[in-house]
Structures are given as C-alpha cells and as structure tokens.
Length: 529
Ligand code: AHR
Image 1 (cartoon, rainbow, N blue to C red):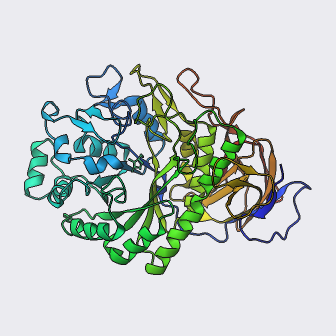
Image 2: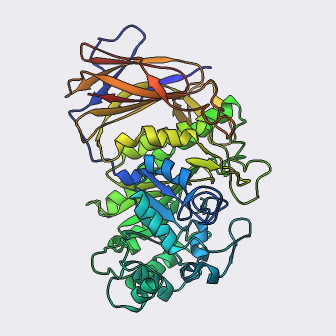
Image 3: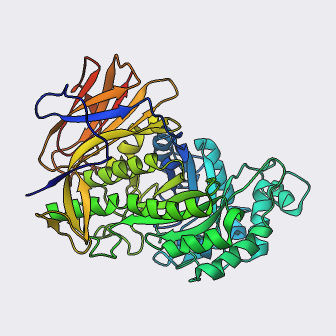
C-alpha cells in the first residue's frame, strides 16, 4: 500500500537526536494554549432505547442493585469518569417531551409513546427530579434540552422556573410540593434540538426568530444564570451557523454542532464489530474530518464574533453503526470495538486543539445507545460491561481543565474516499480525505506535570517516536496503553476485559528526549513529571 507523508503541523524539525528510524516530534510546553474545558468530556443521555430505562435507571423496586432507583454499578463506573456535564432528555426526544408529565407521584404520571425511537411506551418514572438529582450525585452540570418543536413558550418558561426559582413563585411552590425544597443549579439550557430536522423542520431564519421568542421568557432566577444554547448545524451546513450568528448573535452563549461518524450518509453504516480494513480506515478518515468541519464553522464564528463570546458545542458526536442483530429496532443499541476507542481518542485530540472555541462536546450516548461508555444486559440480568470508549474517557481524565500544549508530529497518511469505503493506493486528490496513522495531544495538568496521549491507528506498523519537550524538564514517566490483537475486538458480558488498559513501560527518558514505542493499533496515555 502506497502512502504519503505529511507533517500534521507545518513545523520544521531542526534536531537530529533520534535514532535512524524514529519519528521526531516536539511538545511545546513553552507555547501553552487555552485551558481544555472539562465540558469537552460531556455525555448525552436521551430517552432512547435502554439509555435511561435499564441503563441509568431501574427503579427503587428493581432486583438489580440500585441507589434510589439509579443502577449502582453504572453510577459507580460513571463516577470514575468524572463526567462534567450530562445532556438530557434528547435529542429528537426533547421536542416531543412535556416535562410536567414527569413530575409528581410516580403512580400518577401518564405514560408516553416514544415516537422517535421505536414507539416504546415509557412510564415517565424518570423525570426532572430524577435527572437533576443524578447530576448532583455525579457532581456534574445538567444540560437540559427544551422543547421548541411541539412545546410552548409558557411550558419552557415554567420548566426553567420550576428548576431554578427559589422564590415564592408558582412553579417553585409546585416543586416544593413534589419534595424538593431548594432550587437546582442549572447552567446549560438548549432551546430546541436539530431544529432543521426532528426538532421542527425549520429554516435557519425561522428558527432564529423562534429562538429569540422562546429565549425572551427564560428568566435568570436569583443565583442561577442560564447559558443559552441554540440548536446548531449538522455536519457541513455552514449556512445554518452563518444565519444564526447573524440573526441570534449574542442572545445565545453557545451554538451546537452534530457530527456522527458513519451515520449512513456516504454509504452503509456497517456492523460495529465486523468490518474489513478499508471500512476501518474509511471510518477513521470520516471521524478525522471533524477537524475541517470545526474549522469552517469556527471561521464563520470568528468573523461574526471575534471576541469569542459564543461557544461551539459539539453536543452530539460519535460512531453510528448498524443496530445489533436481535435488538429492538429504533433503540440504536450497538457494540463498541477498539475501532470506536480510536474514534474517541482522535476526536478528543481535535477538541483539545480547538478548545478556545469548542466549549463543550457530548458523546452520543452514555449507556446502551450508539457509542456508549457502558452496555447493560438487555434481558435485565444485571450484567454490565465497560466499552473500549469508556477506557479512553477514563485514561483521558487528566486532560480535563489542563492547559493545551501544541505537538508537532510527522505521520504517514492514508487517503480514504468520501464515498463508499475505499482506501487509495495513490496520492491524495480531490474527493479523498487524509487519515494520518499517528495522532498526539498534550497538556499541562494542574499539578504541573504533562499528560501526553499518542495514538497509532495503523493496522500493522509499530512506530517509535522521539519527543523533544521544549520548556519542560522531564524526570519521570509512567503510563497506560489500550490495545488488542484486533481492531474489531470488543468487550461483552462473558468477556468483559478483552479491551482494557494495561500498564505501559516502553517510554524512556534520555538526555531530555522522551522515546515512546507505539505499537500498531494502540492508544498510550503518559504522565510526565
Ligand atoms: O443521538 C441520536 C439522535 O441523533 C438524536 O436524538 C438526534 O438529535 C440525532 O439525530
């Protein structure tokens, strides 16, 4: 297979300390960038399939061990991830959801039909109290998606009042009647979701007016200031961003972006666990194109908002494969292989790089749906498994709130087609995407050490990289590696640790140079002191 070499950044490499075949790289601890917003590690929990019911929530009377109805094993695993923000109740579900049906005594809550996702009947036992209490227990910010599509201004305004008013107001009184005295802290509030599609099929001009109207009536109650998020573009819809930046402007603090890897637009989605080499590289090329997409939306925002007041929030991203055979249609239950771990790692590396504009990202979704952290058994036997994606999020926790450090690294690049799965044997040209084999991201943590993530997506080529670290004297290095024999390997209930992190000992410091052996198909996260 013929490949070409490019420099991921345009840096010149002036030193020669590396052994003959080692790849030279530089970590610029002397050129620190912005703080990596912890919200980039955000999660998304929609009423979809078994994300809420059977995933996060089993109810107090369940034989599955629970804490006041929340699955204990899932809760504990999520606690270890330091989830910074959790989005709820959708997704498409949000624009069909009427929050008043999910408060008060559970026995009196009306059931609903989940129109977007398989027509499943839900009993509304998980509502506003259950969600906001979960966020408090996890120590994360709630991110509520309000209903613009089928809801009213009054309904949305009352929801904000119910959650955040501590005064003697009608909705605060209703909340107290339902057992919660103090208002919750709710910062992030989405005014609609996918307004161009399931959220109302609107034009950007029409939605901008809707945003302005709904937004007018969402009050900041004492002690709570809403960060107002507009329903943003899908993938390559730059016009949507442009119109909203013009017409909504600084009335919003954030605008969202949705970007999925392989959701079926450019070819079949394919199986989560059965794919060939071309499909593998093709998916990673699609994943990495998120950088171009972010850059283009950011360029529009930079022009209209040079002070950077409006954040770009990638509040839905991740892999979207075929549903697992035998599972309920519309529930989007998919397995999660080492390939998914690469999508997580490469995407997070991109978000770090644009953290000055990318203020939040929410992988879709937290449990049992699309690229989830956790899978629970669909038969209710109480089994749970951590996915390879979970392990990436856990290994990357030191990046939360660390200061971004630029990295120069050369890499072999594969050219992958924009259409059906094809990996090009010749040089890249129009219609092909670059898929570099190596990717790295570094940051200075609050304790003064450096966290470095290095990913080698090559199926067959081990690499050794010599990192020079400018502006930092390294004395000690330790780390972990996530790899497996096959990129299609995954964890299931019978084999929960096929893809799991292990200690990594192949990083050496000599004369200020950090030499890292990066096996094919691996993700390494190092702590450098
Ligand atoms: O995450 C699944 C769905 O994808 C969400 O409900 C919707 O917003 C998007 O199209």
